[in-house]
Image 1 (cartoon, rainbow, N blue to C red):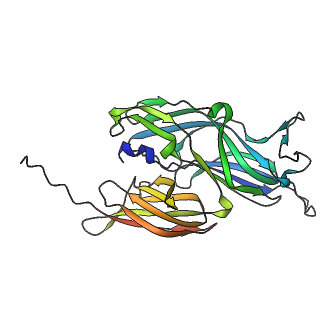
Image 2: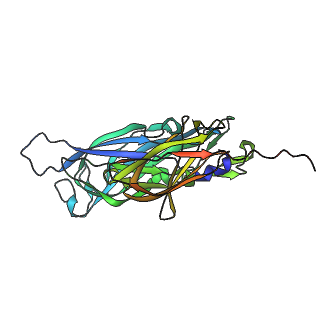
Image 3: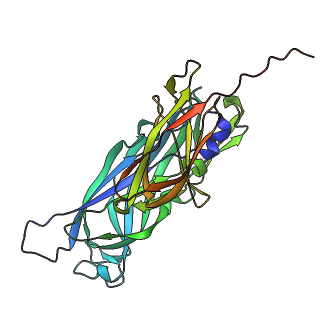
Length: 309
């Protein structure tokens, strides 16, 4: 893919929180906590030009709000009570440095970040604290990126609709780290030599995986003998109501996967170098289900040779 598309990359930075009941007392019908397991995944970066996209996550916390937060370890306004008896509006989910090359994770692969018990209630906001952001190109050039307030105050991500944790039950939270808007190339992005660096403007969206679905499939190119060949690095863009929701790239076999799509109807566009673009309308995503959507792209006509006339 051309580097000019770097502002369109849809790199999935998914943090999945799995809440499960932890009480062994079967007669307790008012469980107040669940267990949180935090995992990380990501969708492909344009690896034909980029070798690494590194980030160190060192803390994640969440805010609980609403009447559901009332309890022995929370205040009525949703504030948490820490071990010293002080109140804080956020509950720490993880506090441990975890360096990750986002290119190592793609198409549904996850890595666990944390596991902790959390109070039952409604969560409307998480903060992701990051540092050590850098991009390494395949020519060896490394660009260390500044983090606008992300290391000090965390990247704030609102959860819409709120994630409701019920004692003894399971719910999932998915964070989509959109590199298409988060990593902006400086200089001329049409070639590696023209890149002068990157600006880091983190954009992350959150969705409740328990009410979300998955879109997956294969992008293939029609060959001269009419056979199909999976296309690596094809750009898959998912739209809802004419607004870009997320973008990903196919792997070496032409496969792609987009997780965390809320139930509804979407449009999908596919673009691969040397092929006619593909598109599909009215793709239904059902909560908890996998929707399969394959594309077969036709090669563009070969360019006419320049005769100099």
